[in-house]
Amino acid sequence: MITVSAATVVTSLLLLADGPSGIHDQHDALQVWVAPDTVRVNPETGRYFEDHRGLDQERPAGNYRVHNSVWDAASGRVSLWSARNEFVSFQVVVGSSQPIQGIRLTLDGLAGPDGQRLAGRNVALFRAWHVRVRSPSAGYARTSLGAGWYPDGLLPAAEDGTVTCDLPDARNLIGPSHRYQTIWVDVCVPRDRADAPPGEYAGQLRISWPGGQKELRVTLTVWDFALPDEIHCRGDIWNGSLQAMTDEQELWWYQLLRQHRLQPGVAYYRPGLKIEGTQVTLDWTTYDRRLSKYLDGTAFTDKYGYWGPGSAVPLEHLLLPFDCNKKGRAGGGWPLSLPATGPSPDFERVWVETARQVRQHLDARPETRQCRKVVFLGGLDESYNREAYAKMIYYSQLLRQGLGKEWFQYRIDGGYDSAAMEQLQPHVDLWVCHTAGFDADKMARFRRLGVEPWFYGPMVYERAANSACGSNTFTDLDLLTCRGVGWVAWKLRSGFCQWEFDAFYDDTGRLRRPSEPFEKGWTEAMNCRYGGHEYNGSGLLIYRGALAGRERPIPSIRLKAHRRGLQDYEYFWLLRQARREQQADEMVNSIVIATPFGRAAVGNVDTWKHNGEDWDQVRIRAGKLLHADSGK
Image 1: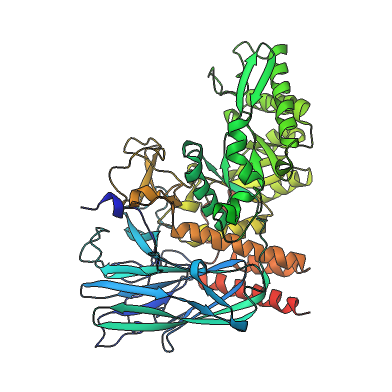
Image 2: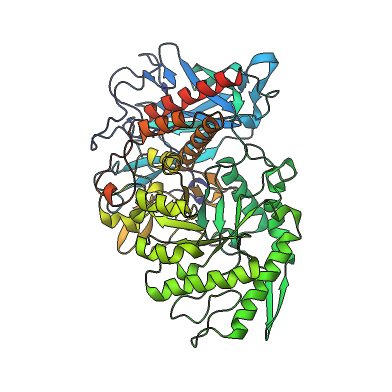
């Protein structure tokens, strides 16, 4: 039986079981090869899960144990390319038909030009933890990669940088069929040129086990440019659990997300509130103590133990405390819920005065002036009726009286049709539109009228009914579904919103909070029941470290895939700055070959190419262009 201390980490890599298998001969007890970060390896078969024949577009195939975009078995060489201020990754796969205990992997660092080394925290190894998909996520009969044990959670190496593993791993509960284990490797290239001058870096990755050892040569070409610290792909991941954490726990999650170029969208941090008649008093003590470090960027500095991209950069946007009560509910509004009798002059005075004080306080603090302010009224979320539209307009006008028209963005969420948006558009600044309603022509029209578009919802539509789920996080879909968020955002000139990165449910379907124990450990991928359907990994990109006996949160491979796509977005942004926007568009359109959202996308599951190596070649081509431009 698995113990709580072992049940939390997931990582995955998939490799072919046919033909020659990397560095291996008849005297070796252990097979070793390397895979890129775009796939996951089945621990029972050694094949890529993404080597899936159910779709029309070409998938990863062939003898990828011998050669792929990062690996050449003949020379035993791993080849990587990176800008500065970027993470690049690969996966080492070890396999054996016989049980082996005590396998050890180390990568001390990479030596480069001018005596510089990438080592320590800049070179990190993780052991993949597997979760079991028993059946496809509901509605994804064609695109699901099927049942099996998927590598997903990434358990960090020991303090000395060593990863150890067994085949089979008794802790992961796969059993005797566990013949292949994935070890994820992250390399972070520092931002400053003096710390990472351009050129080739190299080091030896050592694998040892009782009675044998191997070495792989890892080379990294660092180009002469850096990805920006700022996040240019606008968006966030809606979250309901961070506020239930301690300040220290919350900080770890914010920092992990920042390293992956993501921002949580937390609703609703609020100051203390006291209302007497129409007199409003706000107490900002706890609010400021908790949030100031994120709003001025110090949470992402050495002062709080942060390192990596985005150092010292404040949050890009902040969701303000305001909300209204849902139809038919008496409470839930802030600062006041709307009475059943409707608005009154006193109700409006309280709202306007509270808004005035919120702006006054945030304007008085220099750190909050850099941050975009957004109001989202969850009580009107996805509301499709005339009464709701009238309330959206009413609250927009009310808030503008207290906050000022240009000081904040008024956001609505939902797949509204053109007729509704014609009415709402003069009052809305940010429209987070469900992908089911994200028709390109409609969104372009309202963008021209000054409404900023974001998308949320499924990235893949096998059928219209998929609109009720968020397929961009599902464990059993292609990793490119995660990477594609950044590419689709560029293609559509849109931001994005996702639902949750910390979604754990119990057997009744109730969301569990971080303070609650999870008595089962973590081996099942299915974490969400909704509307009578079951989904694998829905809204779960980060695992709670407590489940593995650790304090800090544990990233998933799917989180890493999101990072890869958002880093790719920064390549395209840099090409735009270099007056190469047309080339950036051509690159993206060579991969995202069809419009992914809206009515026309339903039933077309081949909106992008399904071979991750094609995506990698585009990134490398972009990197070489930017590197050449840096020398001009």
